[in-house]
Length: 480
Image (cartoon, rainbow, N blue to C red):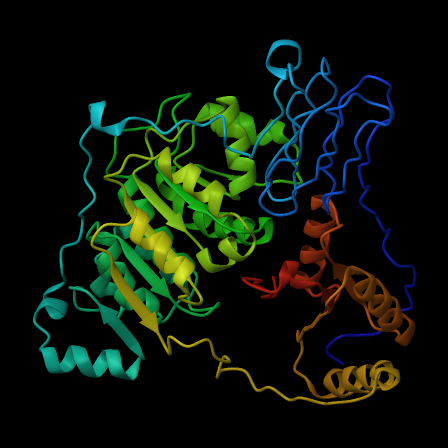
């Protein structure tokens, strides 16, 4: 049987977020709510002066809350901003003289450099030399290949390659490609590599699993190897922004595999993990930084790193980052990067918000679309819908797991996506009662727990993963 039953019970520990509340004081100003995961409402001070007021915690955009305390009261405490942080309250009537000003949104302490007054060191970003076979293909042959691969191009794109040898990558990159057993490039790689290696800005629209990570990591390594070395205290040459820590760690794994032979160093910067090791990596100097927007803003505000050397910028899953409310942080980060950089944006969809971001920060970009521009189902997946009553679900789930366990190939895995954390815990316990090895993951799990769960699932020790949408996109579940 591909995944064996075991008798382990015992659900994972539950961790509940706390909610902030107002303080009680005779003179103090109202504290703003915020910082807790859901944002709480901060109550005003009870019995405070005539100007006392409560703050409201921000939920996604980190916007600050109301006025501060009494006439002589100090301002409310500044919130942290970020995805869930709330801003602090301002001072009372005399807050500017006697009280401190409250905190604002994350990134407010970052100022846009005056690039027009700076002397920027020239850098090279066009490394593409077309393979003779690619350059000599007729327009008809190119059109037929794009049609077969469902590639749509908007802009003056070079001809796509049709095999790895035509990409003209350095020998060390080709050796790693062959070592990992890749047969031929995916559609996004075939068309994306010639554009990225040419130094052009690019938008790639493709579903998860299209091979987009390699489509930008390999050109990044070529770009880095043609720049002056990074010294201690200098920021990265390539920056990759991703919406979640899970995706960021997967990107880091690819960057490590293909960058080690030329000593291209990287670090992964994300929330929910200690800042110390991440800060030390940045201070020592790395060529590639893979980061979630919130944690990177923290380090930029503290001066731990800077983006003065950054000439290659990637926005991965841009649509999801905007859905999660990261647009203000993304804009702040991009403002810190020299305007003549190369920018590559990747998205599963192409809504107006993503189009506006591209228009604001990219120059003469080429758009590649794989498949339909409309949001649609992945045709590589067989979808079966079983409509049933709530009380039938547990029985049907056990029945389905038995069918899969008895008929699937060795090493098969099952992912069950659930709407809420509470449901995740309940379903995981139910599956374990059935005797199946299951692990679960949701937003309340620590980074150490998440890493353990993904490791157990990938190696096959637990072949069933129950998760909220924290693991829904970009999850690579290959064995080994």
